[in-house]
Length: 276
Ligand SMILES: NC(=O)c1ccc[n+]([C@@H]2O[C@H](COP(=O)([O-])OP(=O)(O)OC[C@H]3O[C@@H](n4cnc5c(N)ncnc54)[C@H](O)[C@@H]3O)[C@@H](O)[C@H]2O)c1
Image 1: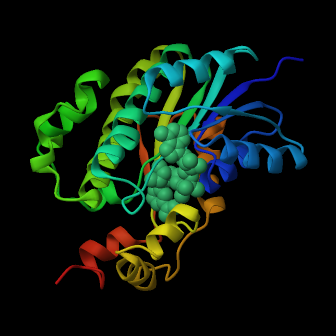
Image 2: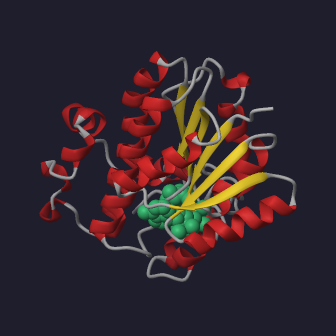
């Protein structure tokens, strides 16, 4: 029997939790820039009964994305996308964050949107960071949503003199992810498919541990201590939301990004996390 094919990018904890929740009975093609990460996660999943194959890819490179899609299509029609590939403010330069998190996500959503099969569904992981940043103008939001991916890094608002630091680059990238999800879901809809985003708060993963131990470690620890939930989240809780979005229960949900942050954003605006 032919299996539905699920592309998963970023062989990290969040991707794995979602793939384990929603990927049973499916062919899972697991792409990561670090093939050893993809192999490690595929191996854990295989030992738990999942049909996962590792594949080296780089979401910041359109040709590498096309190679990933071609690999996935060898197994059948692509019905699901889980994009959990990304770099964080303490891991990468401004240029790298914009190239991977902003441009790479835009290209991936566009290319998978061209081939996604009817009834398909995708989720991409953005971040609470995109929600905390001050509002952009309606025109800036529109440019982030609709500028062709190949031109997007040339936008004036993304030029080096406009980006203060890696956190600002990350916030812009994650805001852009939400806007791309809205614009792309219209094209995915033409294929009878849906596309949504999930914006997690602090989720304990190797990426978050890098943040805890990085220059903003105190800031992050304060954030989860003072958010209504009083703790960081787990990848499995992100998978709870993804399961809804990837299943038929989410059939009327498309073009949305769901905040799952233990209330940290609410506390930032209206509670003890509000900046002085
Ligand atoms: N962990 C958190 O607290 C948190 C919070 C908000 C958002 N996020 C977002 O969730 C996503 C997944 O994060 P995670 O915590 O699971 O991280 P992780 O570090 O566990 O996994 C990320 C994976 O992405 C891969 N990757 C990096 N650049 C790539 C590229 N160019 N092409 C392909 N793969 C690449 C890495 O090699 C790594 O295996 C990221 O987009 C991150 O920004 C995480």
